[in-house]
Image (cartoon, rainbow, N blue to C red; front, side, top):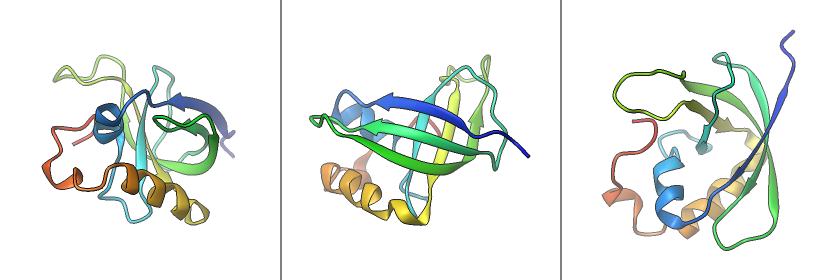
Amino acid sequence: MTVQKALSLTIPDIPTLLSAYMPFLDRGGIFVPTKASYNLGQQVYLLLTLPGESERLSITGHVVWVSPEGVSGQRMPGIGVHFSQRDYSVRDRIETLLAGQLDNAPPSFTL
């Protein structure tokens, strides 16, 4: 059994949130920059702070994207975390912050 790893991410502003958010996942997801090694499907625990907020949101999710260190295309190393079913409220908070911007988003950290 793989040990669950804990991560912490503070998103400083809306443009960074727009680049990190993964709206194409049904429950939402977020790109977390990290040089640590993770496997697809691995469960992770994330403490997320959104722009303009001080509350740290606790998220449990699974790794669905891996950009390892040294990845081509000038991509930042990190992982994409798909939120769990209990974290729909986090997806809703993020989409409220990004209202009207998702359709015109610049390239993201993942796709």
